[in-house]
Amino acid sequence: MDLRYVANKQQIEENVKRPQFASWGTIGSFVLVVLFVFFILFPRAALHQDIFKTAGVSVITEAYLDNLLRIYPDNKDLRLMLASQQISLGEIDKAEATLKPLLNNDDPSIRQEVIWFKFKLLQKQTYSYEEGTADRKSGEEQIKKEIPILAANEHDRNKLLSLARDALSVDDPRAALQIYKKLMTLPDIIVGGWVATAAKTALAAGDYDTASRYYIMAMQQSENIKLKREYYVTAIRSLEMGNMPKKALALADRYYDHSLADTNTLVYLARIAMSAGNPQRADFYVRQLIWIRRHSDKQPAGSRR
Image 1 (cartoon, one colour):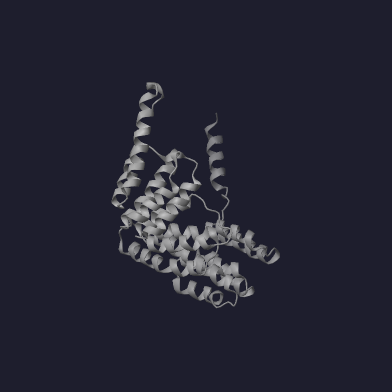
Image 2: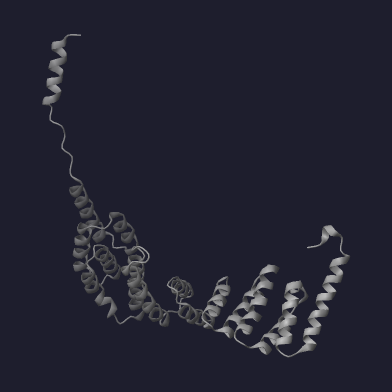
């Protein structure tokens, strides 16, 4: 190969001017200009939310949202998007000013939506701090204060369930219990697996009557015999913990079923009857226990539980 040819070729390539690409900032600005035009041409809020989410948090995105809000000052979704950007950028005072018109809105549903929005942002910010830090503890205390306010004006089942879980996450069973009680009053309430959690919450809050009632509801709902027995016994134990032995016995008698009876349950029921001063009922449960043991002894070894 001719070395002069190679040298000339290299020199020619070095002299060729490489194409200059735009900076990321320029590209970002261009994208947001396109979004600005898109918003004006196609004012559909749900679609805009998804698009601006992909644009990420930046002062450029904030500026364009601010400009759009000047054109559409009554657009609720724009205000929420802008406030979200401002909070993410640490501009809390600006976010408050952005949300203020919505909080003063005559429509209570809009006010409630904004309060929810601020609550979710508070949670996001709080749980971004390390557990045990002063900022985390301060945020959790603020969450505790906000939960009853939100629950008082909320009637959506799913949101109330979410608030109850939020209350438990900040170790506030009493607030969670009040929410569960409100859920029970809603028309056409669908009793789900959350009732057992509500019962446990009532027990933790020291509301033994309510805990007992909710455990019975959980028992009636469950199709698993082991869970039914567990809920039945815990319902009785809740009243016993509240120093109500006679009421505990009455509950045991009312919901007793042979399918719930096993050795441990019957021994416990006999003890409850004696604590309530009713030896006749204690004798009944003891006889049930003897009957079960006799029939258990007659079963083939392989069939015994």
